Length: 190
Image 1 (cartoon, one colour):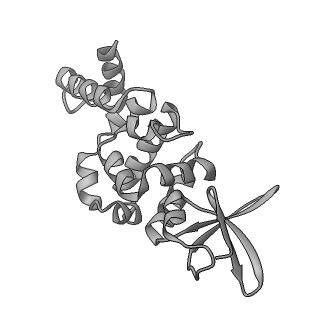
Image 2 (spheres, helix red, strand yellow):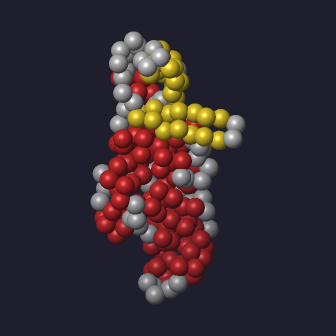
Image 3 (spheres, rainbow, N blue to C red):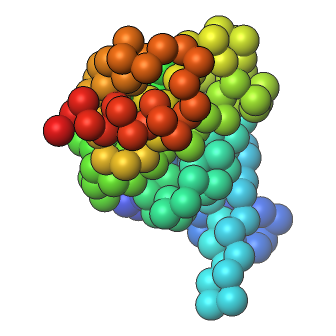
């Protein structure tokens, strides 16, 4: 590594210099003028070519998953990795803790809710996400509640959504359609 600064490192690879944007954890673990191996992700847009660097495959995989969430770009994904790390991210996602995501600089409540909603929905179907976060896919699928997830996407907190979904099921019964349950849950919130 040739140099490092706030959120970036410069690597000398056989005489060619590359600037990589990195999460804070990478900066703490690498030393200037020492050999370093980083996993990379190239982010290419019509007006930019940016390389992101990671120490572990779990960090890079989580970065890539975050890029798949609507409204989350590389800047927000890097802020989350810097502010939380993979383990804390997994704990917050499993607990549907929107507030934990909102504490990260650059992540507002709406983006935090979207992250929880979209990645929780993927957890039951995405073995890679479940493996990264250390949660078996089957266990997540069992506790996933589509009605609560729909309410979270509409702006409810996870706790509000769970309570309203339970109330709607108590009123209408388990045989009601998802649409009817969402409407009843929204009425229960008001």
